[in-house]
Amino acid sequence: MSHVIRYRVTGMDCPSCAAKIEKAVRSAGVDEVTISTATQILALNLGADDARLPAVEHAIGEAGYHLDRLTAEAATGDRIGEVAPHTTAAYRRALWIVIVLNVGYGVIEMVGGFLTGSQALKADALDFLGDGLITFLGVLAIGWSLLWRARSALVQGVFLAVLGMGVTGNTLWRVFSQQPIEAGLMGVLAFIALAVNISAALVLISHRAGDSNVRAVWLFSRNDAIGNAAVVVAAGMVAVTGSGWPDLIVAFAIAGLFLHSAWVIIRDARRDIADARR
Image (cartoon, rainbow, N blue to C red; front, side):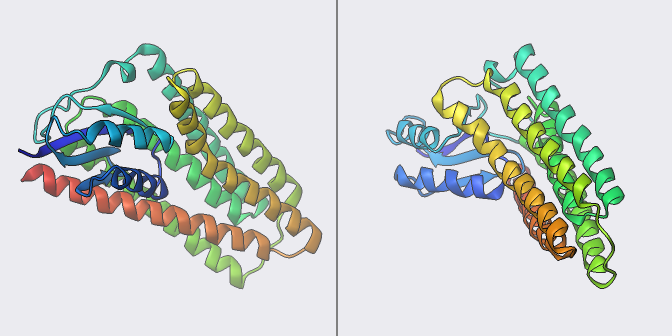
């Protein structure tokens, strides 16, 4: 008889990650899969002794993510069981360091965006704040029920969406009121952002067991690094051309991806809340 088997997914921080994990599950011959970016939980509708489970776990590991099977198979008002690796004091300390790095520099970069007049820096700051908040939720929600994790994620998703819309609206306003940009300071802040992302990855590497988990760390920071590099390129283009358009284009791109991620979090959280209440 089939029932729901749940895993906590480590290394998933965006919709594209969820898509890769779903593809890996389907490659193992399992079609009934639900994955939530809101709660970072993978649910499979399989029998407890289904022979495909090892293949699913192997496929996801090969994709660069780590699974921890939850001890509770139903998530209503009860607490979800947790596994030891994610409750160690050292791992919690590492997560708090990552939270401080992401949220702290996100605030700094947002201020820098206003000082330099760069919309791309503001958009990149949202990415830092988003990552920090996702990690913060993960620390606080260890042992929470799926319902409460989903509720927290819903609040987080709405908050991130509001921030994203604010940056998008401000960027649109800048299209019609071109203002000078301090390209030099913009580039320096983008380079520092790249260093912060690498530092966060290095902090977590020692707490990942096995090659697939090491890959997950870099997958987690890869999108952020790409965003930082785009801001650096935009700063160079602004300096060379004297135009603010490179900054605006990058800002729209980053803010658009950010808003999409926020929307996915909200969608998944609402679905998880509905499922938990059944």
